[in-house]
Length: 299
Length: 324
Image 1 (tube, one colour):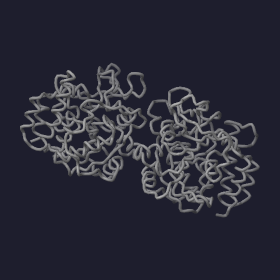
Image 2 (image 1 turned 45 degrees about the vertical axis):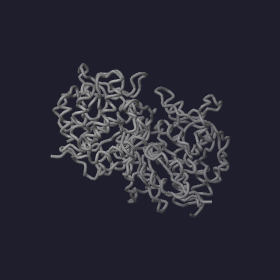
Image 3 (image 1 turned 45 degrees about the horizontal axis):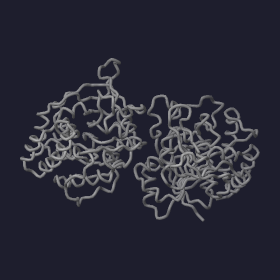
């Protein structure tokens, strides 16, 4: 069965790889891409999304522009590979006239999305706005698989920190959530030889993915990370093949206040408080299998 | 001159009077009414709004809006009675659950208020006037979805906030307190704003005798207006008695009058108005920077500190005495 997925993105190098994988893997169907504010301003995440989809032969995927600011802010931005203009020609495709929030409500309330996973790999503003307008969405979105958060960190991960109130609304909505956080993405490092092996697949989308990952490898290795972290692609891999990621049910709350902790995914991961688990949290990933999934998807 | 107006309400006794005043004015073309959670939950404020529109016998579309504030209910215990679950005590209930007007078959439009606001403001050929007399959730949501709507707003008149007068807490007025983050987004949106705070509405109190005089026009709106004011007088007596006996502010309708005759607002000052959404006793407070202490903050509103009560009462009589 082909799994349908809608991706909420702030493209972004890793978002680009994630969309290429979701758009070309035989087990997934990329229904729509919803660019939102995030690492870069909305104008750039839209532009990058359009360039990527066209260069990656995914021009048929409709793009709906989303929110340009978090619910209440303040606006924070990413850096490094997260804010580069993707190395693809200016796109000829355009976003749809509808707003991403309209699209989410129309699509899921029509019943068309009863089996469509919603995958935000960006700040959660679009879905939060949609939930405020149409609270019944919580019963229509079957599942969320998201890149964001970090269950064992005292500092907030970017996607949550960039709109903690939106994340709070989504995490308390009752929609089943699989969270792919920094603990997972950090151990799924992609090396130059992995990128080269993907490039050798020689499809336009494999080459596009390799072009993007070359940039990330360069930046992340210079930062001393010992490899490229392609955060968002891990979430796609976990959707394609759930067994690639080990998960544990945990209780997660989104911190809204806090002088140093606003946007933290506060977790009872040691289960000391015996709080009722509400999120299926990734705690490990088979790195080699992750690379293999990318190779299988990008042929 | 005719103003094209969108009215946003959380009906509510004073909202009902504002709706009637707007609909009865021949200078206002009411494009639609949007409803929001506030004085009562969204289903009740929408039902009450439809009852009032139905009583008026006018074909004014009503759009149901947001059921919850933007984010103020996310922190546990911060807004425990929002959405409204019941009065602290019956004697202090100035609104009642339902407007004392017959039930109606009239229905709200299928489109959500936020989307209707966005569509209407993006498509309009002339700038529109927005009068918002409830929590500012719908407009904040619309601004988050389509920031460019401010280009088509002529003016926003807001009943909300307090300069020296407050009601729900010692520091905050109810509409701003329900959704302080929305108030902050709207106050800083860049569109021209006139703020009608409690200082102005309390100066424009209405007495029992004046309400009874309006009743004498003997039309359904005039009778409902009088009934609602009398109910408010009885509620305020126990809740927050005014210095003048047997009198009550009718907040929201002053925002309608401010559009028709700007001079009904008095002691106006152009300042920066900031909204506190910190935890603690200032949550929801509107701060008027009269001393320009925050020099980097632009003047974002004209705030009325008082009102011409005599003119206000004359206007109420003209509006409810008209046969329109």
